[in-house]
Length: 162
Image (cartoon, rainbow, N blue to C red):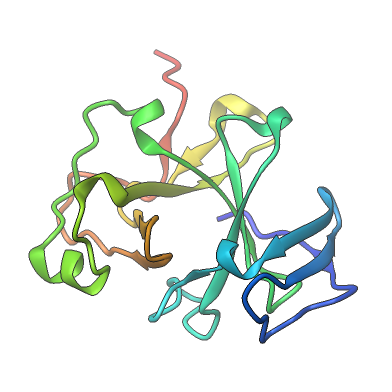
């Protein structure tokens, strides 16, 4: 799991529609966001159950990776990526109950990410395939799954070195 250290210049908890919030990220600079950018995780993320709101930040230099940052806590952020980019056959079991929790009406609105652990030697970088993050892009609701089978690892190398 990659956590970032951020210095918060302005953290806005209650944005009205159309209002913006901003904070200073130690690596990415100033991050501005609108209320519509906020993703809500009703159950939080594993180990961060009290952190319910995040934003996805894209930077061209980081593509295809994105940052999922918590605007309510200047010390919480994760590097994430769509797992199908490096694992095309990735197909975790997603229950109807989980889809219902995400209020999925349209399958096209479902996005999936995994958390990346970035290593100094990039070939050793891993992804947590046993804890995918699902997002309802339309309703801005997210959930991290805990896969109970042994099909996927928490430390899956994203670059095959064989």
